Length: 250
Image 1 (cartoon, rainbow, N blue to C red):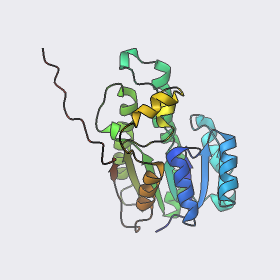
Image 2: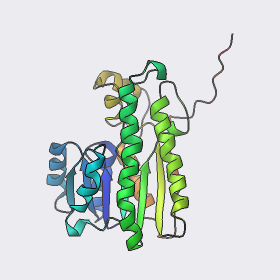
Image 3: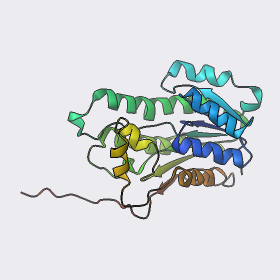
Image 4: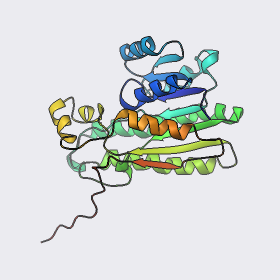
């Protein structure tokens, strides 16, 4: 069942942008939400009138609801939300990390996601149709050094999705947590403050997933029959596995 109107946060790059292209190619209309106006303009030029660009920093909580209320009528009946906006910053041990970094991760990965979801859900319930797809991470399940704040935020996304499913029990609105492993996008460039060489080393020597791989997986979940809910979808490149336990011996 193809969604008619898809709202995508974080649509100016990476997975969010790939989902926008995939949805438009499938015949849906897309509301592309992002901070970078020039990238939204370029996406609009590329994808045409079935894309509505919305310049919005989802951390600006006071703007979320008014921005959605100002949508043109043909874009208002949102039946698919893809919460793709998110980021990681730094890779230091927690007590050495920059508190502004983990505050920004919490504000984007958790707080903004909650507010966007809360703004969209009432309309889905009123129309009797909807699907909330959250972009989590394998970091929410498998810990790694330096990932305390980021992994914690993605663990929240996973558990929030589970609890939201319970709250929505008895309604037709679906919830899915998409949990990718290593995907080569701007993710590591952002994490390392624009250091492209350091970001490139993250993916050196193996074939990571692409943004389109994840977009295809998201779209697969979104297009299932109305009675089918994929609760969690964990995706890793073949070259990536969970690390297992570490033993620090004397």
